[in-house]
Every structure is written in C-alpha cells, then in structure tokens.
Image 1 (tube, rainbow, N blue to C red):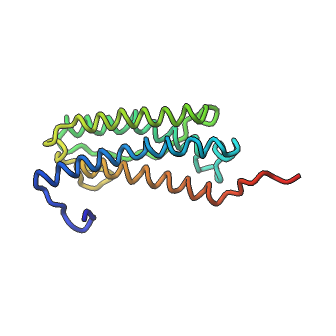
Image 2 (cartoon, one colour):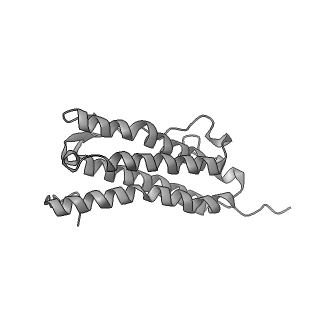
Image 3 (cartoon, rainbow, N blue to C red):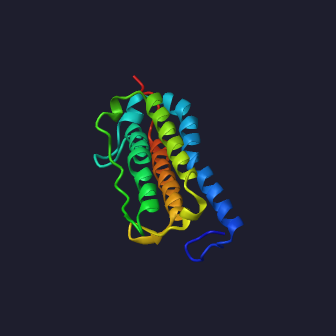
Length: 176
C-alpha cells in the first residue's frame, strides 16, 4: 500500500508497476471527460457556465483550466525535473480562462482530452531512471512519482468538487 507514512518499495519491478499505474491514472482524466460529455450536454447552459460564488470556477472554466495546466505547467515541470538538480516547483491556482464560458462544451472537453493525452505522452517518454530525480513540489520533497500522483489527486479533487456542486444544484426545469 502506498501512503505518506511509509516509503514504498524501490525495487525495479515495483517502480515499473508504479510508473505504469501512474501513467494509467493520468489517463483517467481523458476517460472522465469523455464520460461527462453526454451528461453535461443534457444540463441547462447556466449549470455549466455559472459558478456558485465569484471565487469559484464554472464547469467550463474548470475544464479549460485543467487543460491549461496540462499544456502550460506540467510539461515544464517534467522538463525542469530532467534538466535541473532538485527544481523547486509550485502548483499554480486553478485560474479561469477569460472566454471559457463562451466556448462549446464539447470543444472544451476535446481540448482537455487532447492536452492530457499529450501530457501522458510526455510523462511516458521520461526514462525510468529520471523518475527518481529529486524535486520540491509546494515545499515538499518529491520525485516524478510524487508529481504524477499530485496531478492525479488534483484532478480528482476538482472533479469531485464539481460533481458535488452539480449534484446539490436544483437542475429541475422551473415551473410556470
């Protein structure tokens, strides 16, 4: 079991299995985006274009922001991990793309899937020995195993938050 209280085994077979599992988990966002498309299409536009609070992101903004991280932030982290000795990496906040709510939902989800597919390819191309190179992410010592896990956990957290919000919303057609 992998947890923050014990150091996982570092034999070659275990590390290979961890790499494979993490790359597979990175693909989970692609699968979720594909599965969500028909469900979100059935919702009224306001449900995917509005946020409950001014500091929150709408569903469309969330998808655009996750794609931007996959395109603009995470590949740089991986390049720095391979090029620098112990780079200091910081997770940027999830920020709304200015015109995300004006974009077609299907296009946003396609963009998210394409960005994640490219990121997975970048991660897959990292040589096995480079996965153990040290880095700091948000002040914590880590390596590519930890970075990939942090990306997967961040995805899951944002999608869970979005799912709870949509589940709690009153999406019934108004009477009248």
